Length: 119
Image (tube, rainbow, N blue to C red; front, top):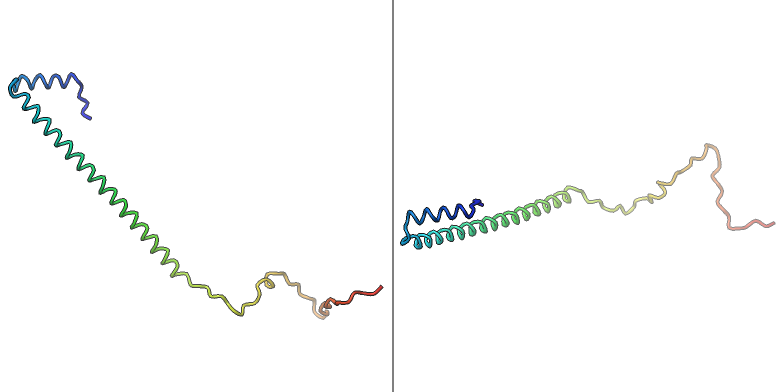
């Protein structure tokens, strides 16, 4: 994260020893460690809280989108008029079959007879 190597840490420790002296250096190191620990805990707490909020926002967004989709389906169903079945509707199969018009003045075709011709 900060890209601090061992040589930089050694230099900081040597400067701290010269500035604070050997008597106050252990107390200062302990205090610095406590502060670093508190900062890390605070940062991790803040990070987890933000992640929870992002997750909660995502869940809220999904629920909102689902509700919008449900309302849209209801709206479409209410706009489509129901098609009631017609009780006296003619058979559609005869309408789709091709009908040949007989020429004017001709007789209608004879109905088939139940009798078979005798030889």
